[in-house]
Image 1 (cartoon, rainbow, N blue to C red):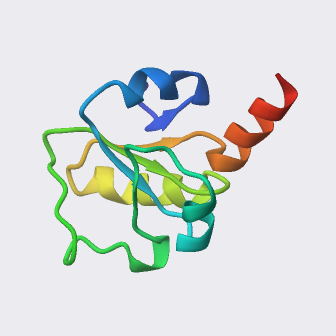
Image 2: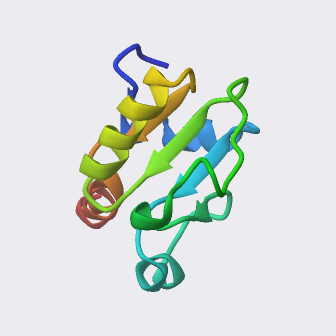
Length: 101
């Protein structure tokens, strides 16, 4: 993975084959409409290390709609010692790419 804690969407299929920690930060409605199986849903506004446990030994892959919230959260978590990464461009980019292929 790259050092700036953003993962290009082209690397997502390979990431999903690993036993990493995956969190979808979108709201529950958007998550229920369409999501990746390995991702658990914790809406961004409810994300708290006080309520959820994530290992610092395994990468934590974050996904939001645009990539902005997941990037900011990944930055914060990295400062706290987590191996946190954001999917670059978020779910919007994933959906847009699928439509243009």
